[in-house]
Length: 69
Length: 409
Image (cartoon, rainbow over all chains, first blue to last red; front, top):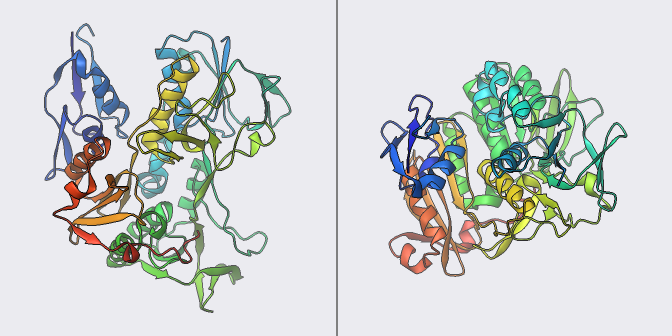
């Protein structure tokens, strides 16, 4: 089962907590000082890491969507 | 369990509630808080919300309807005053009690009072709660002189915000550098230069001895005899775990509620999380108490899982941030300035310093260097050998890296 990570770059404050929690999913652009979502659709193996990055974002810039929602 | 009581409507408390429901707990949840407002986010209180007071209304961790949706009974303005483990009740300030089957202790930390003589009625600001922040914001009028006692994270963040608002700012630190106790003198010196560059007066090495009234303002007297006049004073001299209500309960509360590696207290059905919890982190092989945001989130969730019967040890690599002027400071792992210290990068706008102990990489301070942060988090989790990592870095002699002198704030 795949799921989707939705990233709102407008809200991103450049904390980089997502990058700490899940470097498999996130990169960081030091020029814009914002996170970069490497791949939006992910396999369930990465679910826990994606959720940790969502919870770890103090700016609330990360959401997770399931295919049926 | 028919009823779980969460004491402390804090970040850890809210995430404990969320995790209880996610894991299928369907019984009652009572969330007890001494504060008047719904649980809110604290990091902006010293930074963005202090800069823009409109944001004070926008800090709720969850909207009001969330508590109803989660089936949470909220008891605001209900400070816990005691715990009876035999009777399994929490006593509240109004004299009533709340029975529990499961208990999550998440009462956080509170600022230490300024340990100085101070005339009655003279207001020395502290910053922990929303009410504290509103009071401080109202007093932070451009052109006024703010004196911050204690160059820790809160003090330096407020100093930064106050400068951006157009106040004159003086920071007083008893030790020889800002953040000396956490980072050591060398890294502390970088922060001193950062603040001085932005017009903050930083005075280190002469401890304040008294706060006095002076006309309409305040005056701080230092040990070296000098007196500094101020319009307002903020004390930022550290925080301690809120465990007064647990006195005599039988729990071990020497510097926080002592927990097992899984955050259980040893009393069945009683767990702790957040700033108030002290536990043995197996990754680092030491007991720790962590007063930071991400830890409160994850520890609240973990404590909830333990309460529901899981027995996993909680062994994260802690991390936190502090924003001061244009410096985005990120700290990962454990930083012990008395151990191994090596500098990877230093210039006017960025800094990367790595810390090690007992032969392994333990922590890193990264300023405006987010990718290095992720790199070192992995190195810490993987227990990379210090000699492998530090080979190309510039070592700092331990004796030069820390001044333990008067850094007792």
